[in-house]
Amino acid sequence: MAYLPKRLTGDQAAINEFIDKFDVFLFDCDGVLWSGDHLFEGTVETLELLRSRGKKTIFVTNNSTKSRADYLKKLTSMGIPGNVDEIFASAYSSAIYIARIMKLPAPKNKVFVLGESGIETELRSEGVEFIGGTDPALRRDITPEDYKGIADGSLLDDNVGIVLAGLDFHINYLKLAHAYQYLARGAKFLATNTDSTLPSNHTFFPGAGSISIPLINMTGQQPLALGKPSQAMMDAIEGKFHFDRKKACMVGDRLNTDIQFGIEGKLGGTLAVLTGVSKKSEWEAPGAEVIPAYYVDKLSDLRG
Amino acid sequence: MAYLPKRLTGDQAAINEFIDKFDVFLFDCDGVLWSGDHLFEGTVETLELLRSRGKKTIFVTNNSTKSRADYLKKLTSMGIPGNVDEIFASAYSSAIYIARIMKLPAPKNKVFVLGESGIETELRSEGVEFIGGTDPALRRDITPEDYKGIADGSLLDDNVGIVLAGLDFHINYLKLAHAYQYLARGAKFLATNTDSTLPSNHTFFPGAGSISIPLINMTGQQPLALGKPSQAMMDAIEGKFHFDRKKACMVGDRLNTDIQFGIEGKLGGTLAVLTGVSKKSEWEAPGAEVIPAYYVDKLSDLRG
Image 1 (cartoon, helix red, strand yellow):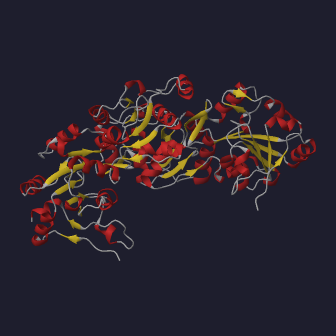
Image 2: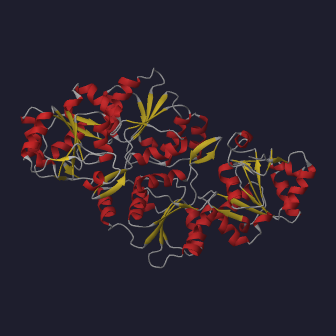
Image 3: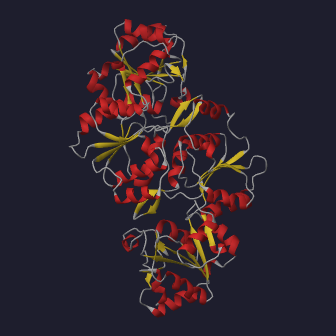
């Protein structure tokens, strides 16, 4: 039988017990700490409260366009104190996975990137060779010479062993054609994350999943996704921070990414906030499959 | 129990009986009449033979980038005599469907097009208003103003009631963002065709399905597809040519588009050729679901 999450809002005893239970809090950001460019009231104070009680705070985001340094700038610009080591983004997660887990033998270990500079920065930081990405040579229309050279391989790099698809605001036909051909020739298929949409301005825009899905449809292959809820990301986070999963809590606004990520990762707890995508009615619905352990109306309710 | 198709190659009596059985032959083109830019030997003579015996020939293509006039140029350049009324392409099929079947009431009947000039030509020929398509104003990067204006609707056309997705060699993030937002606001979702790939240069490039799939993934909606094997296309063909389906035969190289199109359309026959995508082993495999009535090794085997 399904359980219902415990509501912490307004219950100081339960809040104290909740906070005492965990050493580490993993935070999704958009919809939890802020929405778009609007910082939620009390976010800074709530993080401060947790830190003052000795808790480790880690910011976990599927945003693949930003490097950790870029994301720290975003936190800082929102007025949230933090440091780069507290940030875990899907571009970084992907770079870690490629460099430290896949470790393809040279020379066929180059990455063809569909994505923005954040991915490039993180690949560079892990010493991973790549092509594509923000290369201006690929930001143009396809030509008859491209068809020929992509088909016969003369325009391809023989050392590409991985295609990594993230959110690419400069996606075009030429890049998709290259990516498909590398996959058809046996490259491994990775995605920073597969969120179909990107929430922005109170609506949705195409997400990283919109970049990988044409390739999934063309090849019949599914990429290994390195963002939430993929446990490859959880493994990478644990590998870096070395915490006890039972003493960690995932905080997020989306049941099918954040909360599922925490549950599948067998963390000690999951906390949903109602300031983002998912509504209370979703876990109260008959047959609901992803149910948080706790919820608050808004994050700052943890201040009591 | 599954049947096996009758092989006509080398069997003059069977060929004669086959040809006598039909008044109308619907031809897929690429993989049947030619491959890429290479005309198969005997194509022109085979069409001539059928026409000399009083048969109607109709060219049915999912190619959505070309208008019928464009496609006639392609036939002519390949040395195949024909006229524009023999051509039925998915761009035309889409225009017919929108103008004559959907007939949305004005003013909310404008089409947002993802695709090339062939679609625009056919929409114009049917008097359908559209935006998007080859408009240079959409061939650029997305800006912060776009996010705002797309989200709040100030950059959208209130009269768009349909999103039509075909193969767009100039697909980009900005166009996908517009298309998504029109769909989210209730526009009907059509696709010229949903082929995931475009065969070219003996390999594959992204097909029209690569343009619609991100929108399917974002919205959870399936478009009505107007190309093969959609019966909306068959209905449009019959509506134009008024033939007896029992006296018509679909000729093609792809089981899951061409042959399925003919079978679902309850045509009198289907003829597979082995000069394209599908192999004999596919219909001979246990559990094969799409099986042609006849096959030839190559189309010109019909010359006996």
